[in-house]
Length: 113
Length: 110
Image (tube, rainbow over the protein chains, first blue to last red):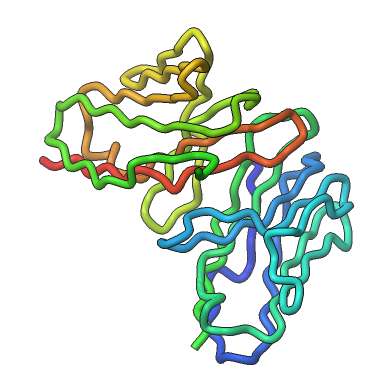
């Protein structure tokens, strides 16, 4: 049963620290998405990649957030420096070329104190 | 106007009840439509696609009205296990990311 995996599942850190979140998409999926979910805003798209190339990162605060895909099996989302307002659940999702649905990972629950 | 709008609820219904959720979308050129389900502290998962002719999956019926840009989900004979947040999702075009509504929370009460 293929799944998207994410690490860490939970992260508590102090303001100003760097946070790195990792995602392994489903093997064979060529599109990877990063979302942030909060009670107030719901699911917000931060960035997405197709065939490892970034297509859109307009949803991401550029001064502190960065997203990369070093290879087809790994996507990363970094926050440096982190701030309390970054506290949220960060989901990675993957999809296949021409596919209409997305498969979500379990999320990283981030708390910045 | 938000791209996808839903009533946040919560909808509190007794077991066995029928409940309906609605959703509107702003992009008239949107191509495909879905309902996702998200349990508390879990990730969203695809519940069902929504087709123009309407479609059914067991106790769940989804309908699409393109003229009114409106999507609905009907749940018959509600079970306790149906308690979750239901996300209305729109695909504006084949190559763009899905757009998610904020979700409607359902609590089915014994």
